[in-house]
Length: 565
Image (cartoon, rainbow, N blue to C red; front, side):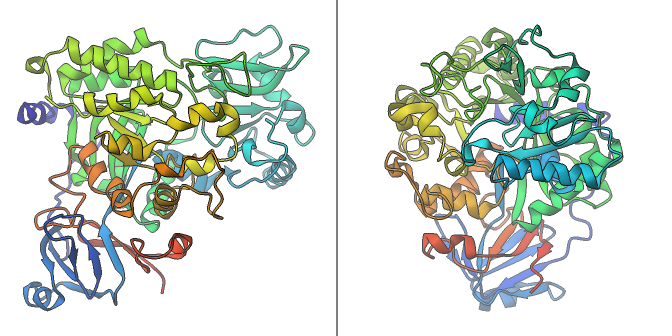
């Protein structure tokens, strides 16, 4: 049935993407890496000194002496001088367009206080006096003192002559000024939309904070980016990611138009980063994927489209994550469903029959339980004989807070936990207040999931987080803030070994993308994707992990990033 699933994906998509496949073997130079400290993630041969590639594939892994004998005469030779080489790293959950927009637009990441946010807003307004809207993203109030949401009054005090919309880093809440609220017709009489909330003050007036689906009321009014701007953002995001050492990104929920633009960028050679793409749903775009079937290794072997991204709840920071019991710091709220379970179920059964993978955003323990219930119901309803792929490898994205009773269900159902170690850093200072001590036992529970037999893959959720693989590796093995802090209730027993962390960034994401035979380890015949660091992340003290520098990023045997020195 796996073969049947692969055959289903065929050429139906050929007319959908505005590109033609590029020859993957043409003009790909041979590469010779020697004198390295190579971690292969191949249990049969875990370490090596050298690697030889040809036509984008690995042809030899072993000693430097033997590699020198086997390398083609025209191979590009790189002496690593002891630098550490891993299989090409994969970010198993990120948003490429958002990463690019962060590079090009009003970035509020790292803002340390409300006053700093206001100062940055004032500077932006002065720099861009002719912009009809001011749009930004990246603030996180939980890291401020006091940790309070900004309000329309805060923004009005700086900019009142035009709409201002500033999205929280997690993308699940925004704050708007009065001009933006007025443009959208939001006042004290505006009802909450399904799956969203318009926060109000004690007098019943909107504060300016819109959560989850309520953001759409303003979002649909924001002038859309032009095609040229979107292509520039994709190119900028991909360039940033290869400079950080990533060779592949699992793109967590996009429209078809984004894949079409990306394919054109591959065609022109402007983007090298591999993308495993999920189409957002429920949506006509998701219906289109269900109808057409998946596309594997399109656009020159760099782009695969076989997944639908769904949402069940919101984010913990904005109290949109669906919890079984009320929030510890907001006893009247248990979060919300972004989509009702009954809306999602028909998509699941169709996806099973069509061989389409499902990944669902679930952060709260109620959200995770409902998604596991829905998956189990669909698996029981669609027997293997009717499935496009026998083992569908469905995923839960984030799997952030899980009732301990539900942890074993991931392995039992074959559901992959796609988690972001850096969230345990980003949430360190507010999650205890949101959840209380009892629920923290099932939060960011990487080790418990692994011990139960589940597959866990690591991503960053950039631009929600920075998107640096060193941070993800460090967070997984240290479970502390970058300055070494962890509270007494932060369950350091959920740390993973460095070997497990490496697999969470290499071989296991390959499995989650049905690509474990093609990538994820350094073995003869696999794709020649590598990430090299100046230091051995497997051995240096935890505090020195962030001091390591990416020195090389190799995709299909091509040096797509080389450190300046």
